[in-house]
Image (cartoon, rainbow, N blue to C red; front, side, top):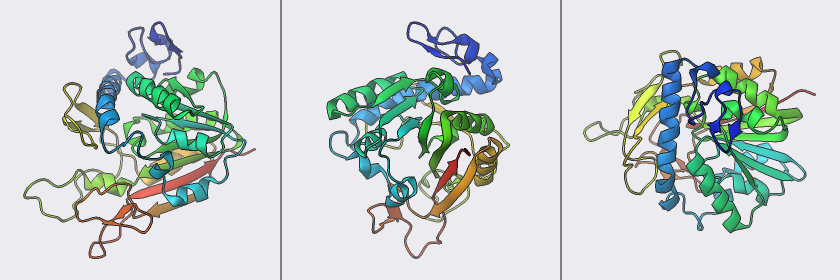
Length: 306
């Protein structure tokens, strides 16, 4: 998947997308993996109108900065004069915050054409100077014409859609200019291992339901509801998620030549995953004091030497 996006045809078949706009196994993935990636792309296209209309996203109501925990801005630092890239940006609700905090340029990238169309509309209505590029993250270097960035920000439900973390880490390293930083804020593998919200009769206990460690392939989900409110999906309900342990993430980035500068784990979530969760002081959510303190998200900052 190292080719580029062509407005007339879809993605370049030589680099991972065929002329019809689907993934091509010749781009470095076997056909079974490519088929799952196609299913994920279709699923996120189908999710987009539901998310646009949802109260969860609150378009026109929620501020872009509301999507960030306070510790994120501490870790990221000042943005004045920096070029920022947000791969796997979906609707760009977080992407807008970088433009609003003084970045010299802000770019979002996503594999869903429906999401990119909406992100462009949302930015235009907000009067924000943000560029959005339709491309898969594995193809980002080519799609962005080899440009590099001071900050690449990603996460919050992004890495689980990546079948090859080493390849992803290599792309992230290539997108950074020397001295640039990758900031990953992602749901902790412990949270993913706990699985979905317990069903009727399951009880309130926190139970491990999925793998923490990678190696046994993706988890297949088939659901008409996404993580937001709104109507059910009418098509493309199947999605595949690959588990990635914290060790796998760190080793992939180190193997790509990046230096890990900080890693924090937090009990906070931006929404109440379980009914028992309570508001934290910063407005996010945590488990009650009667439950074990476990990490639900992590934030990692890695720098490209130079």
